[in-house]
Image 1 (tube, chains in turn green, blue):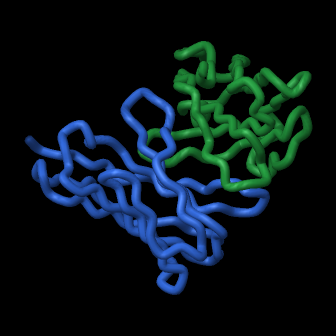
Image 2 (cartoon, rainbow over the protein chains, first blue to last red):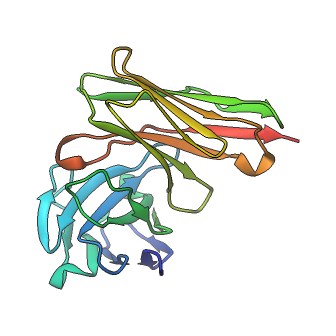
Length: 115
Length: 111
């Protein structure tokens, strides 16, 4: 079974530029999550999708971050414009359903550096 | 506000010993709690899940306890090996079956 795929793996941009991350979850997984992990901290949930609908985006800074999940499969997370404090690893995870106790399967992450 | 605390410092133990990691949470009552392992440059990997009505769960050399009165979970690795060196994250569940991750404990098993 293929795991969660993310690209790019690394990205360096200057502040005020825009950036986009892509995630392809495990086939058949209905729930998709985007997390932000700052160095030395645990992952922090940004947004949760169930199929192509948003379940929770309460911690997503909506003035600069946006995310979509078209056709309930792949997802993109965008930051525009980026700030220095956005430097972090952005993790995508998926699970078979959001209504049980299912474990989450994480991708390798995208390391973003904002200069 | 909800708060999760894991061992505040990195944990170093000798190979063959039992490692015990602590996860304390405040201001909420999770229905279950998960433990993940994270290696440098990689995403977290699921290890174990324990429900609120379970006191203890085991998987090979791993054991997790869940005390809802103390609001604490303990994670044990018996007969530890250098390959067990990693950061271990606890994640109590929240609403909508979401997880809130602690900051993790960095475990180093010395040969």
